[in-house]
Figure 1 (cartoon, rainbow, N blue to C red):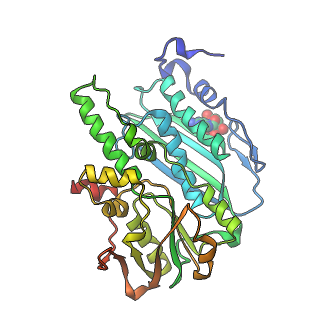
Figure 2 (figure 1 turned 90 degrees about the vertical axis):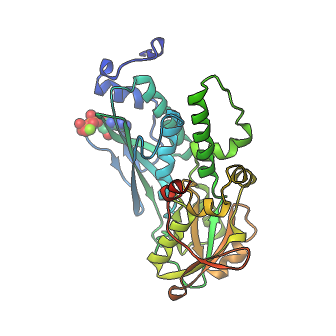
Figure 3 (figure 1 turned 45 degrees about the vertical axis):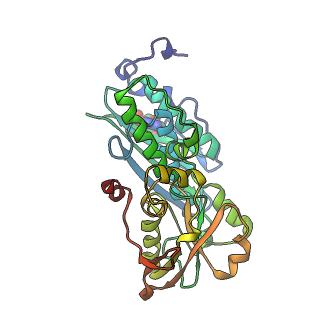
Length: 349
Ligand code: ADP
Ligand code: MG
């Protein structure tokens, strides 16, 4: 066994590509019956019994993550979550991933070990197999691409395009936490730059910081819907903010929507941090990102099956397309929904 930790700064060139891949992936094992062959050959071999769904994301340092406040282990974990979330958003079961990385010589073997520790934890907890990837160098920074593969029952696959007028709009969990967690982390990073000895007590922000650094993909929601015998008519995961995701469903399904402000699920920590940062919590929910909850529509007749579930909130209903897409405020005003992602909100403050 190689022991790199005696010297915690092992340069990547000391290992070479093959040793590095072996070293990083040796702890991974294959668990899915559909994975016939994993890492080590020119290609993995998969033998699924059902239709497969495939999704890829590319994450670039400085654009999608900042290592100043994102520990590498969390980054590894989150890179997998972001992709699994897309598989669950098809109402499918995630089974395999591939992970490709490009990194500059600023990264050490130990840094990549941390990244892969996070990837490993995600694979263990979510029961997916790492079956391949690619490793290369970059001129600057770290880039990670994860491809996730899943299996679905064809008649239960939920696309963005299946919503109908009068369907109920439902969301899992609560919203706005990841954005507010990022605000706290950014603020602390600025404080740290001025005074590196400052040891802030962030315990009151634990929930929202975890929502930002350690999001969990909602594996449980397709399982729950299966148990409740509910097939969503459409589904999407919330990566960019509620508003733009709702508009994706409306556009793909050719329907309108009435979304009710009073129904938006908020954690108390989101409410208190919004007050502290002088942000409107509804704006944060609509335009903030990275909550990785699932947004879906169900037929009205399914309402009794979902209404008492603590993981699910009915937040609106679909209308005819020509009625448009509106937020109905607590004051009963109707405001058109706009697609403004994460960056638009950043520009505002
Ligand atoms: P090739 O030259 O055929 O692309 P590689 O040397 O890149 O082969 O990869 C060898 C094996 O290691 C393959 O099975 C590949 O999928 C796997 N692999 C390479 N890089 C990674 C990585 N970063 N994570 C997981 N598996 C990887
Ligand atoms: Mg390769």
